[in-house]
Image (cartoon, rainbow, N blue to C red):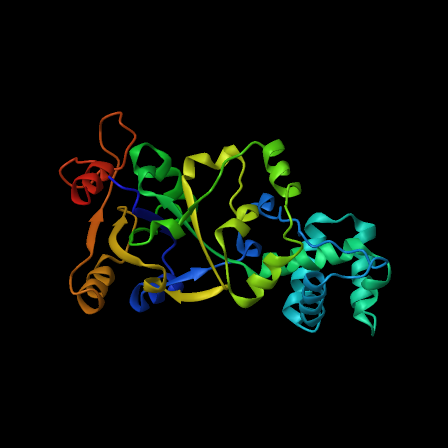
Length: 299
């Protein structure tokens, strides 16, 4: 079967309910994620005040200056330096931010420009994470249901994509390879920041957000990119097709009403459970595994 089915494991809460009713998906920033290793973007911007700024760098600096007037951006900047900087540099950032002229970084501290660029990237790139349907092929789905779906009390939402080229696979590289990607940045010189500011997320500029430790490989993760916010799923050629829940889920009637009122009974909604054999795969009624069910239905 072509790779066109993707799974989103979610807790059951008001946001999930709203997304189901409104057919929306939420693009989050890495500040919402649970892995500090997501904070690994390094700007391609080259700053050398003595040589002067080239046209691209000048545009980027203008964007970053404007961000410093945004209270949310300042909050993210301080949060990032708390996560990654040593105490001395954190204090330096705090002192600089609290001065009347926030642009003093242009008069000597080229590292501060990199912090500003990273903060912009981490707060301006929205990410929608999905897993390949093949997580149901083994016990990976169990781990993800427990981790992301409130200890099995949430849902697994299965989307079908009509444009799989935009659903980019995560690369589970070793860390030395990851560092190579970060420092082999080509001639962008900050172009990606200009594009992200416009809301343009080109595949060749997203590598920093597609690299993870091999420890996460069981998630078989893929990602879409957009401005951080709620977006209609159909804007990304995604259609919700299936909902799976476990026997710990308590709102089956609500799902049935949503299916009837907003999807013309078009969703497949199934309770899944652990079979009595040693397959370690989720199954549905009739002891067919979820993987078999999806493979047969969408072949």
